[in-house]
Length: 276
Ligand SMILES: [Cu+2]
Image (cartoon, rainbow, N blue to C red):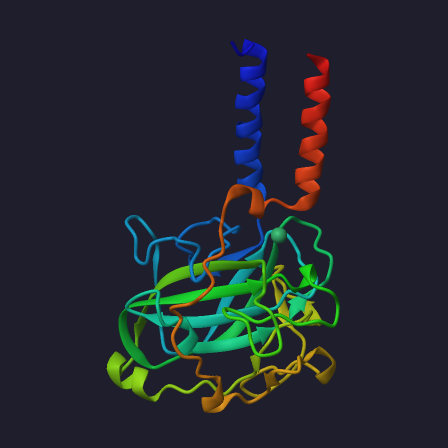
């Protein structure tokens, strides 16, 4: 028969484990409003959060250049961002990349949130059910100067092992029918494997950060931050095909925990057990 104190400990263990998982967090959309405020979603493409699910926010965006915002809840040095569009489902983000290789802002933030603003060209489509995915590979978890690829391994890099996702339901009030857009879209910005990619960002009056670099259409990382598989003007070569074998990262609570938090917790648990 298990002692009641042991049972209490086990219950406490799972309570703390659950709350730590919720605290463990990384990046999410701010504008447009994400499907969920959870910033610790590890599975591709949207952390398992249903497309246009009940009770979720839907943001209407006009076509053309729009300033979007996303936020980091825990800063990960050099971890870049990607923004991609999906039409009518969560299945085609890799065909409709809007911006890839947005560099990380390594500046130390005084508050717990670091807010990024970024100008993105929203396509001129008539889309009553679209979605924007923010993808954030944790390149701080691989050795400096090495690369990883996502959502699939490339011919020279393994798949990024730890990646965070956030999706927002959007309506785009443009003119081009979605079928026509799907047949003709070509992404011409940078693409390829990821490494630690950082740049200087400038604090704005609303306390968000804006990339300091000036560029036309797309920011391209400096050569020193480009992997062997990298193209600054991707064009048609970037069209990755099916996402059917995409990463299905196990999002179990343990994997989401920061190592430090886990070690701290284990130490605390052992100390508590020692008291009984
Ligand atoms: Cu994190």
